[in-house]
Length: 482
Ligand code: ZN
Ligand code: MN
Image (cartoon, rainbow, N blue to C red; front, side):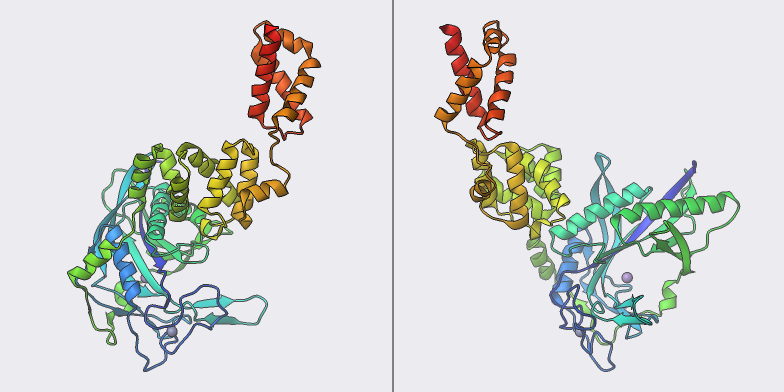
């Protein structure tokens, strides 16, 4: 497909992490029994009245501010009318021509450098319910627990030219929203959903081709696959003389392909009109300032601070600050443990892979800064070796506990009794006169390596290697002198 260029814009829907729903007091929670978090408002009963969730508006403001948007001084809600079984009111309360935030731009890391995406708008709306198609029963069901959950929809311009750019943007957006506490952005659970619109054009062209929108992308992994597929489908169609219809395409993850779902609707198909039950929302400048002042440290700032105050390399700081919880744990540990370099390698080399292998989120792990510091103290004192540090760390992440107690219960505490080690060292030397000869002949490295191996084996790996080495050198030097 040479000579063609992909042009992608993104709509991302993100569930906001509020305690209650967007327009009623029902709990906003994933995984509850079907239809257990429902009231007349979110079930769309006639006559029930919505009330705007202040926390959702503030999280929306934070999102807008973090994306460099203008926050509207007056914002409005509108009804977006359509029929679907998971939408009991027959309309979704959304925002049409007066969104909460607009005109931003977001710089994110890409390919060793960075790239900027223009943010057209970010507006508030409510989620729909969910249709449940259960093969074990006859028919389909509607679960309204999700109906009315607050969403922010973040829309970019057609700024992406490759699937990799889109992935990088999504990863950075997810990181940002997690940092400000706006959402957990779990794509598998549907708290972040992205709908790319895709068109293709001849490289060098500045006009835009007809676009399609892809729905039903359920994981970060699928985003690139869906875009690559749609890019190929469109260029093949155009090269063989066909044309692209403006359509909504459905991504099929199993088949790895898209298929037309419906012809793309235009804004006027939805008959948007102002929501009569919610007055326009005036946002005073000092409210915006209060929210701005309450914003937590953003990923980029934290990364720079890690480089400057902990003396870390840029790359290490980026890995450590990839998630807020991970970097916060590192920071707590750094307060207790001054050797930042060792701490950094423990986090990046050991902890990251342990969490990935065990499928544990940092926030669910049982690690504490105290236990990590206590573990590193044991290592520094020579009580445990590197492999044992990793083993204990894994246990701490899974079940918590006290590092010395874990080491003792696993029989991994190193023997550090110098008399005991000394006796074994003397024995090893006596059994290997050729090593003594090596040592005398200036081949000390070889002699010590050979003897170390013998002593370590004699102690079943439980002797402190630092002490073994020191005693070996002392005794060999004494022998050479005599
Ligand atoms: Zn409700
Ligand atoms: Mn939407």
